[in-house]
Amino acid sequence: MLTFFLLLVVFQPLQWLSFNLFGFKGHKIVVDILNWLLVKSMLILWVPVRFENKHSLSKENNYIFVANHQSLFDIPPLILYLRKYSPKFVAKMELGKGIPSISYNLKYGGAALIDRKDPRQALSALASFSKRINSNKWSAVIFPEGTRSRTGKPKKFATNGIKMISKYNKDAYIVPITINNSWKVYKYGKFPLGLGSPITLKTHTPIKITSLPFDELMIKVETIIKSHIK
Image (cartoon, rainbow, N blue to C red; front, top):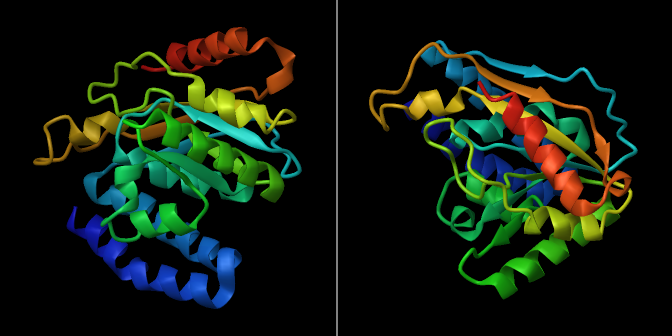
């Protein structure tokens, strides 16, 4: 945890400098380096992170990466291994304040910060985010459970966020991703941290948004993700 926090503190001013001097592209390089270090820092706990993608994802397409959510440690691997597709997250508003590096990246890196207690604000933020994704040829990352599953058992998916992103990105593909074992890092709480359980992220076959009616599409995506949770 000390290593993790120190990396966040050190990269806070580096993010500020890169964004103000070089814009989005310079900022993205610094964020990618930070997340490479965060992923490698997991080896202190004997926790390797393994990412499996057997599918050809063209950088010319927009993608909506939809994943189950088990812990804070889900996020650095997604940023790192999906970096070619400029992933931008849908996150709760609280994460946009006071957390070194993380808050800065969310606030200035193109994420959607939503107030889960204010549906009107959430819909407005998601609409703006969805348009940015489309115009910049970025990709979205969303955790439809809405919060972390602290036991690894998935919660029911909420689909309103995906529906809004899909509305403005009709040519995009949804890529289901199953995350396993990251919850085990926190299985005893914040101390001691869990040791020795590899975190795995597995992508599944991309599905074109227009290939199915939306409700059927969401049932299919949720079934695929949950069926691979171990």
